[in-house]
Length: 315
Image (cartoon, rainbow, N blue to C red; front, side, top):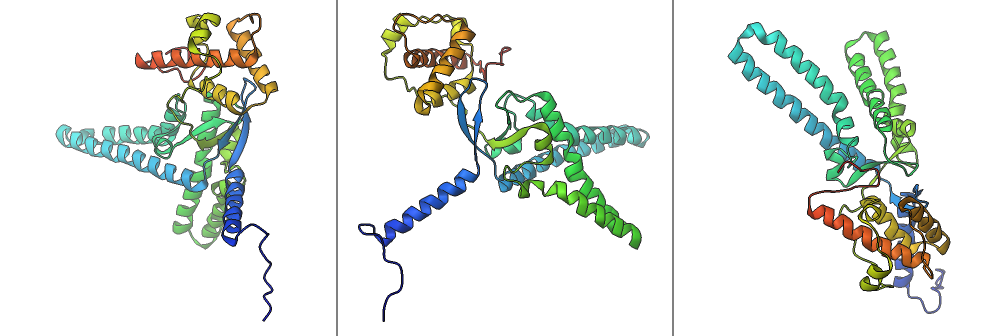
């Protein structure tokens, strides 16, 4: 019987071909979740978006924490009510309702507006919120994406409760409202960037958070002693940027084109007021400044001071 299967390419075994196809399939899968972001410094960095499952897991962790806080507060108030007497029960219950409102609506805002831009649930799964324009995450963006959560999640839940306790006409109306609001609920599943409606309005992404620790030293072209004699940066110049910019600069040194290196060097020189010396190249300047910035950030971290980015001037 004649074998009709396609022959393997000469010199390539079937196992190698299968491994190659598997690698290509994995590269395509990873590429669908990877985006290129151009920072204000002009550097292009690649970010990995959080999957829907990861975002859902982070949300469930946050909901569990919220309910633990609310229930713990309720039990504490119940104990106080028993000690104070029932005449204070209404006051205690009103206080708990106000507390529940703030926990429900400002839990996410409180954590995401901080320097880590992530709730405890997101931090547990290595996620964070980032601005899609490459700039700093603003308070307006955090407020916009979180106030939309009530429409995306609270509204479907309310329609579901209404459909259970209403008459036939009211139940149909509630079900129609539930179907309409379900568009907001399942919006992240049907768009390539896995964004909620709140992310779309606020201009944000939820991404896999980069490593928090400082990366390894990559300065190899110029010796430290030579750099110290040739590039004498002042402390103010050396700490003009933070950890985020250090990581971006490392990406620029490792994989960017000469044109991008030149643009980034010009931006840094303009910001710190640096005048190029004779024979100074963009590469040697960037390597020297990377070394100085990394050393300064490490010194600050030893003193308990962490500068997350160039906007972080209060620490």
